[in-house]
Length: 155
Figure 1 (tube, helix red, strand yellow):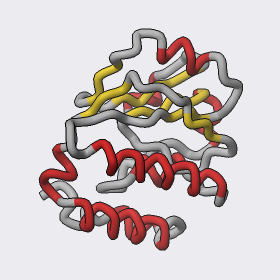
Figure 2 (cartoon, rainbow, N blue to C red; figure 1 turned 90 degrees about the horizontal axis):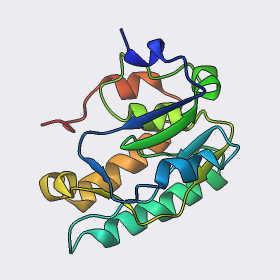
Figure 3 (cartoon, helix red, strand yellow; figure 1 turned 180 degrees about the horizontal axis):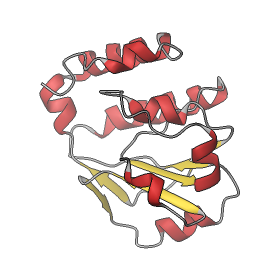
């Protein structure tokens, strides 16, 4: 059973294990927004931050297009809004963060520099693989079957 089904608080935070909150106020800052979903930009290892700045642009563009994309490493939801989307689909093998976040009615990208993660995915898979996978996810944004395959993401 998905642990989120046990949540009884007004907010729910999905935070990956490899995310470090260096800004101890970031969660309190997120509470100030009155919106369904909040995400943040990430900082990473030297030489890879440019990729995350491109991800920031992608997130703003997806929000503007009405298909918000909040990286699963940090998704701060109003619990009611999260369940209104249907929540995470346990049959999805990858990009479940995109699948659920694109169903949010309103998403805010909270500007902070206090959230850090490893660049391991880009080191392992490379920028172009990840970029093409992002495009495929957008093209298949309404095709649940696409997300039920791993697309070599975890290999």
